[in-house]
Each structure stands twice: as structure tokens, then as C-alpha cells.
Image 1 (cartoon, rainbow, N blue to C red):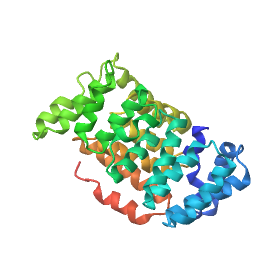
Image 2: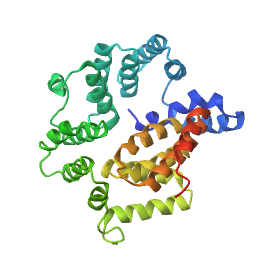
Image 3: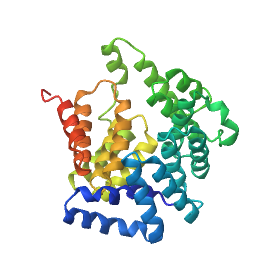
Image 4: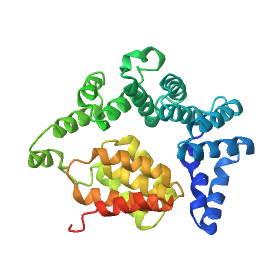
Length: 306
């Protein structure tokens, strides 16, 4: 199952809110990524997303089930079925499809995060499905710790990190959690401030420099790949979520950009300038989708005094 499909499917659903010229341009961009799917599959899938967007969950589920018949091993369909059943408060079915999606791609953060949300709605611990998923997968456990941290379930996150011996991410996450629990903001800033931000031997600094060059050159195709890798390799760095969202915004996938950036906001502790940058890019994304209310909401959050 190609990840590119997951990144691009949403644009056709929302293209009707744009001008005809923009919609045609976005559709042409998507055609390359959708060639392997039949017209029937695309029609049902896009309509399902549209129905889910207007909260017609029963209709969305019916259409996704048709997609499932056409593409039985399509993990994106399983993921969307899990989300649709969750929104419809049918948690048993939601859990079934969320697990199926995760089994297809155990290292996918969003698939695991969706399953954990479904379990949370039912008041069920991860242990209730531990035997049904590849729980021993190192990346899956790292994603689980990150998801718990994002949900502000710090105790659960710390428990998972105990199972991640020798993991640099686990060590960084423990520090991040301890910082989050601090009441003194000055102490938090001191602990989370990078010690060698300008050090040329610092891989994070080098990566940021490369990304800034791509942004300056408006090379959003390369930026998309570089920022996605950065998020995967440094999932505690909110800056990489911002540039990943920017890349998605500029490659006709505003819906995915919103999902990524709203997730990245959870990792900012005390950085007003970076927060403003997130709000500005989120406003652009919602504008692309024609949601002026949310676009203005984020614009109003920007602190213009900085």
C-alpha cells in the first residue's frame, strides 16, 4: 500500500471549495498518484470522505466497505473505517479495523494513535489488545510513548519508555515529560533549550539548515520528503512538524497538513514565536479548504506583539 495515496486522497474531496483553476491544478497533481486505483474505488473513497466530513457516518461507512471489497488489503481504507466507526461511536467495529490497519503497517504513528484513541473511548488499556498487535516492535512502542505524551498521559508514556532500553527517543521523551511536569516555566525553558544549536556537528542543526534552504528555494517536493523523514527521526522536535505541514500545504494536501501541525503543537512547551508560525500555517491550510471560520480562529491566536 503506497503511503503517497494517504498523503493525497483528501484534496479532491475539498477541491470544490476552490476556484476551478486551482481544483484542476490539484486534480492533475493527484492523477499521478491515483493511477493504480480503479475509477469505482476512487469514486467511492472520495465520496466516503465527503460524507464523513458532513457527519453522515453511516453513508461513509457503507462507501468505505465497498472500497474494502475492491481493495481488501488497502490499509488506508481500514484506517478510515476505524475513524468512521469511532466517530459513529461504534467502538467494537472501530477497534477491529484499527487493528487491521496497524497490522498492515505496524510502524505508522497515525494508525497506532487511532487505535489508542478508540481504546481510550472504551476505557480499555493497551493490554486488552496486546496479543493482537506486534507489540514487541520497537518503533511501535516508540510511537505509543509519543502518542501517550501527546495525549498528556505522562504516566502511561513513562511506563512504555521503560520497555525501550537503549532508545535515544525514549531518553529524550523522559526529559520532555519531566519538563512538562515542572511548574516553573523558567526552569522548563532552561532544560529544553538546545545546548549546541549552532554546532555544525549537531545533526538536528544541520537538518534544519538543509530544510531552510529548501524552503528558501521553494522546493516543496524535496521539502516534503526531508520534513517527513525529520518527523520520523526526531518526533519530539515541533519545528519539523511545522515544515512538514508547510510542505503538505504547498503540495495540495492541506487536510493532512492540519493533522500533522495540530499534532506538532502538542510538543511545544514555551516558544511563542514557533507557536505563531504554526498558527499562521494552520490558518493557510484551513483557508485552502474553504473553512474561513477556523482560518480566522488561528489568525486571531497569533501574538502580533512578538
